[in-house]
Length: 57
Image 1 (cartoon, rainbow, N blue to C red):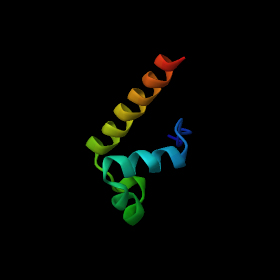
Image 2 (image 1 turned 60 degrees about the vertical axis):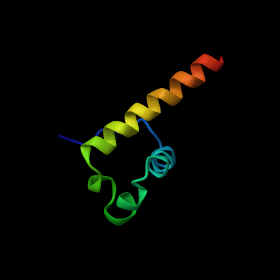
Image 3 (image 1 turned 120 degrees about the horizontal axis):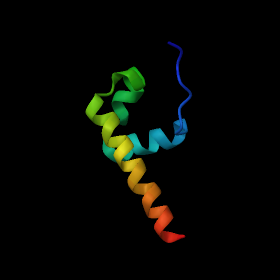
């Protein structure tokens, strides 16, 4: 299977990782070094931010 193109920009993912406290893992080992739980928390936070943006409109 080929890699799927990501929906989130790398900059946004890095900001989320910093906010959630595991950016050091990304720096040391790339995105493959984070736990599944961390990836899930990133998605959850991204959805929360998107919902907040929709509420403002």
